[in-house]
Length: 259
Image (cartoon, rainbow, N blue to C red; front, side, top):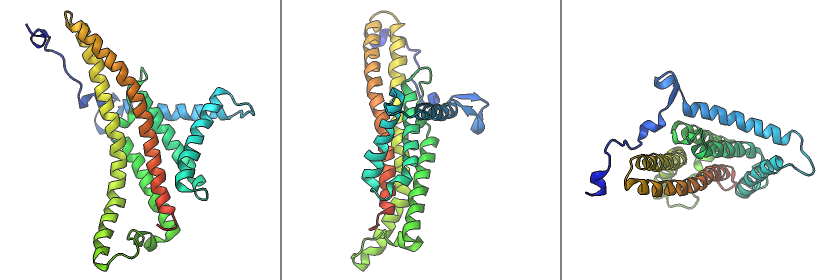
């Protein structure tokens, strides 16, 4: 008898229903688990920042060192390097807040009892992407003027016949492609990673409790689940960093003198 034939058949693989977890109520106005986690993450970040910066010392505590390291990564490694030394400081609070908020919510995906990456709900990445979209357009129009900002989408020196097609392409990129890809990149990685982890963990547990040769297969599956968890931690950090990096890059392009 083959392993497939001997295996139980009542296992249900995880699907998109894993991401709809209402806590209070139902329908579009339900208070769901990701909403609760977002509120919890916001409160946790506020508490941590206040606790680690309230008593700044010449010899910093571990908490202060950690906070300063994260702030320095965003301030110097992202904002200053990409936006430039003259313009970057006014955008650091936005970029730092986004990075920390995304990072904490991503890490929730592998931290019990949360075990849910908030950014796997498309509404949160869309909201953050729209904030970035509004900011880089507004600061660009403030610096270059309304007509100057949109006129600068077309590089100087183009043949007249190419001006309109290039303008349309650049307009689509600025108004649609950038915010959509910014949101979908974060959402897609968190969604896929969570599905894979739930599949490995629940599938492994199902095989471990099924008896027979499936116990060995379940053990191997849980080893893969552990490896996936470590890999997911890296992905969660990188996605927070990439989102912040691209936000700074879009802002840099909007405020650049040659925009």
